[in-house]
Length: 141
Length: 406
Image 1 (tube, each protein chain N blue to C red):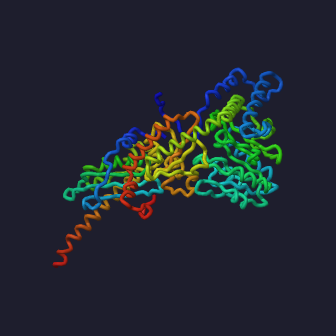
Image 2: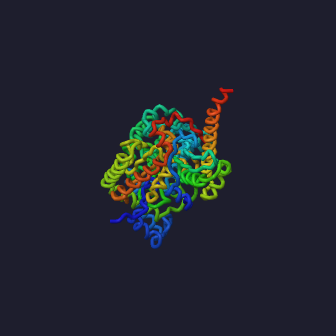
Image 3: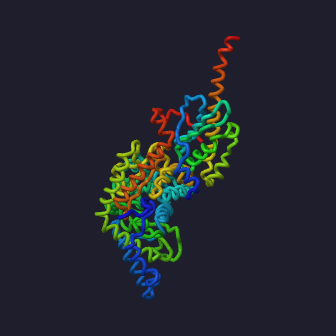
């Protein structure tokens, strides 16, 4: 099977490979897939809590070239988007952009799942932090 | 000498036709184009003589007599003919067949069809190196057993089976023994008499001959094996396989066998040396790289490696100037990782990380050195990108993680 030039480009020059510290409350981490299925995708977002804008995104992927390209593309698209805009990203858009064949559609699904998982993780961390900050006041009352 | 890219290192899939083989075939397309079955003119006699010369060359490489060679379209047909032909002919004697889980699909699928037709098939498991043990065969044989079919060498992992011992057991028990020797013939010495083989499948294109021609060896005495044909027609090949003989291909097949037999004493050690150079070159520089299959009891030119934390198809993209194969699901139509690696107990995650290197007659040491560099570079690059590598490095036991399997 021949790869599209966009898949090859992301594979050869992956954007935003790396990791943020999960200890940072402004970082959301999504880890999806499983090693025995042949693909695991870790996608992280760094969000500005004031504006709700994703300022940076990073990924690490164990998987085929299409999985790597899907994650790389996702990080590109995430940067500068608000949480709401990020949640609107659809796997079909990734399929279209990378010209993925039907057998590789699951790679794009995984990327969408990773985006959603990262946002969920970020929101949970923020909620936990707020309730923690809120607690002393509650005690005072 | 500069390297010519891409490099072909997938010789277990197919091989380049040796130019000497092509040379031998050429006259049989345009000058000596007779039908070997034409008994009444010079064109036919000439073709027939060429076929009989080739038949002798093919027979010699496995220690058989020319009369025991039936030409087919390839090993898939040979396997089908052996399994279905024996099953049909010996049905009154019994309905049980023994084979192994790591056989090629060209053996497994005919066996499954026979199961649907009322036969009982035992698929023997293999050990962690992919070998069938002779005792397993002995224990599986019942009074109903008519045929044992165990491959000589595995196409994915290169593991050799103890054919001689299995042949002896079959002989003792009076059961016919078929071996799919597609990967073995021309690579390691095979002798049907010494090894107690009654039927043997082979094909030309795995030993530097043309695609589209193969043979089934069918023992003629002690015992005389009889087969029901699966292709009926003009009664060619003593009625066992009708159809006009593909004279140019047969001539090429014969020549390929002759060259392989003559050159095996030099070629096999050379390939073994190249394979070990490749294996050591890679394994000494990359941690957590594992051999799939037997470390020593394997085809000289084959090495199958798993690179932990790296997916096979991605690795193949990274070494795009090198043609190899992977057991990764992503390279298969079924999206399932290799059933052969699974049968060895190789975890799915390592099956996804496997690469088969198949060295052959035309590979050079320079190419091996280039491949080592490419593989080390690509694996290192992909591991830097791999969340699994990062987690393992951080001391996380990947088996303890709750993965969201999809």
